[in-house]
Image (cartoon, rainbow, N blue to C red; front, side):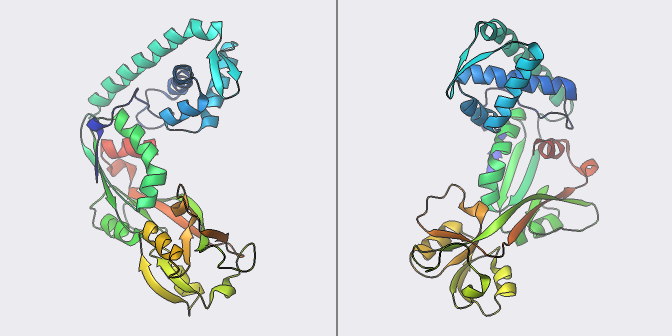
Amino acid sequence: MQVAGALCIGQTVRPHAGRRGDLGAGVEANIRKFRAFVTSARLGSFTRAAEDLGCTQSTVSRMVASLEADWQLRLFHRRGTALVLTSDGEAVLEDADRLCRSYDDLFRHVESLRGLSGGSIAIAAPSSIVALRLAKPLGAFVRSHPGVQVNIIESTYGEAQSLMEKDAVDFAFVPHHMQAEGLECTLFERDELVIVAPRGHFAQPGAIPVESLLDEMFVADTETAPLLQRELRHSNVRCVTSNTTAILAMVEAGLGISLLPSLALEGSDTSLDVRHLETPAWRSMYLVHHHAADLSAAARAFLDAL
């Protein structure tokens, strides 16, 4: 799948604070506050502003509160979840908006001089990572760098590692710390593994003891199948697939239960019974890339955007 930066149209360029490629950490920190204020005023809500800016509602609220403290002005009347500009807020809004736009123009100019008006990056990652952890950063990145082409290779963790070893991608997400000359590997996220079963399958409430799963039939996820084999040596695996939608459908149809990363269930509308293990198990996700000095300008910019 390719994401062409030129096809992603955003309101503004949104560089990240204090990282490689910024025009100055102090300036950028203030610009982010101004942008949070301007976007909140335009959309009338911290929540909608957060969605537009690709961050959390609490982050936007905190930046606006910090700006109010810096200026010793009250910028908004807060009426429930709705925001209404105060007279002071109205007085400074146009200047703040103009400052953000001027900064964006300057940033684009500097980026073009640094060679970020073109180029490409390639990322190998499982679909769950792409959908739930990379979509927002990717959206912000292509708005900031519309000339950079982003190639996304949806893969299993094993395939992602193989592509990284072959130097076929700039970034890969793998399930364990990958050691190789010239590569950097950092923990990206950890999520809990949970049991997914049809409603009413388990008689007991609460967390599930691992030993009670010995006689279960499993619809196994590619990523967690090795864990099943290690912890439940005699487990019955009916099938193995990396497609979470297919796994959930088969579990719902009664083909077995499954052990899935909780991230894979985010945003899914399922009537299945999701249980924690009595002894929690976790899946780790690592981001692998070449040393920063060996990355292209486009790849360095994407790394800074994560």
